[in-house]
Length: 290
Image 1 (tube, rainbow, N blue to C red):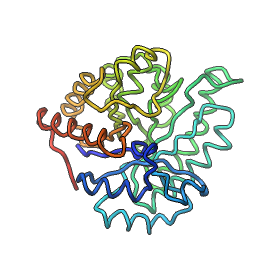
Image 2 (tube, helix red, strand yellow):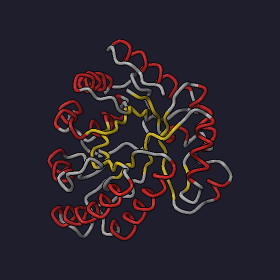
Image 3 (cartoon, helix red, strand yellow):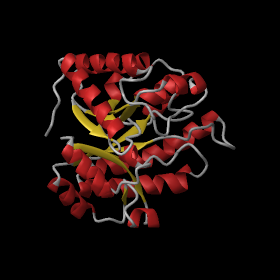
């Protein structure tokens, strides 16, 4: 399996994207995942933002990344598609990300729904709207050979019955699931059972643990964790993560495991990386590091 990390780890440390690349190189991590924005902002321009802008030249950025020995595993274009503004704000954002990702050499794009039930729409109306949105997105994804993944993160996507309906929006090799171990847990689901149900649609995995205090305060009430302040392996979700790794191994999964946690400028995500690497070794899972 391939280890990656989400640059959300360095939001609070106000890293630049290039500084995140430097961290990846120093820790021999060859894949990176980040958020994307349209346009620019002062925080991005001054180098206090560990994500990228779609106004940046994708080929030049790809070449810079290769100079560090790093490539994209996925970019995060997760503007909620379930709300009323999903079709006119979210869909153009994802479409632009698809063509950018093609040039940047990025194989996957994460998409999702909103954290809460959308205002002004019942569930069936929101699902129908998302079906039309994903139809447009999948058509572009197939043309560009970029995989669109639905991330487990919100009101619809943390409900296994709902995500089954969403995955039925398209029978395409370029449409699947970004399974998130932390968001599935905090929503009150059993992450192992959840992942097993959709094992054949998993294209990318977020590895995220949950602290005991956060689980006690929020499990079953929240649908997603913005940033986990718990090192992977130190929380109450570690055993579930281990079982999911075993399940993925036995299924033959050779895709990405993307670390998601607050990095504290390095120490916390480095601890998480060490746990994941030692667990992969223990489970006889080879780290693919090319």
